[in-house]
Image 1 (cartoon, rainbow over the protein chains, first blue to last red):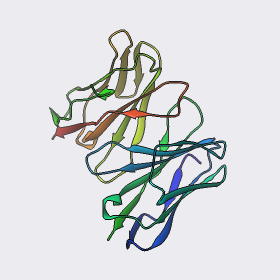
Image 2: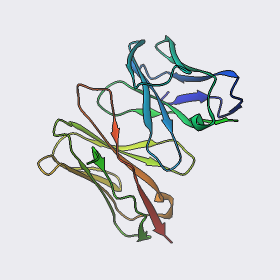
Image 3: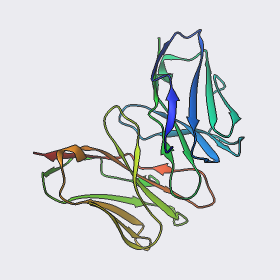
Image 4: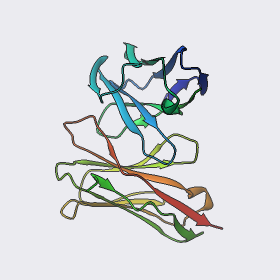
Length: 111
Length: 111
């Protein structure tokens, strides 16, 4: 299995809602990532988990809360988001220096 | 100066031609170099990685690296309309999980 899967594909939420994005990989990769991508911009790193521990937090607002329940799963909990948080949220995983593999993304719209 | 620079394009080439995509980087400590292809509305797909100076070929794709000039390129031979996408260059240090992305070059292959 060489895929990174993400659910849901699309999410619409209000500014007072709480929702979660989910990511799963079964490649045995020990590093997992959350990125945010706005239209016509490159992906922007948010968080890195290495061996299930948070390794990098790129000064992301606390309304985004990551969680790594086990080596295959990565969640991103969302609360009190703003309309400017609307974007494509990408999960990725990596094991070696051979690059990061991205999931299909969750298209998030905050109303 | 941006850490990773790419011409935003669009680069327009006729079908069957060679498309040449270029990328320069500023961090001399960069050790791994990646090319991602991203179709509109989709997630980035890793198509090539290169670590050593010189050329690396994979099918119609050739990555070229010149660390002295801090330059990495991607050649696409026999370009097809299906190659029309945005190509993202990314670099990283071996000691870091962080991929530093360029802003991407949009490639259009005309039938």
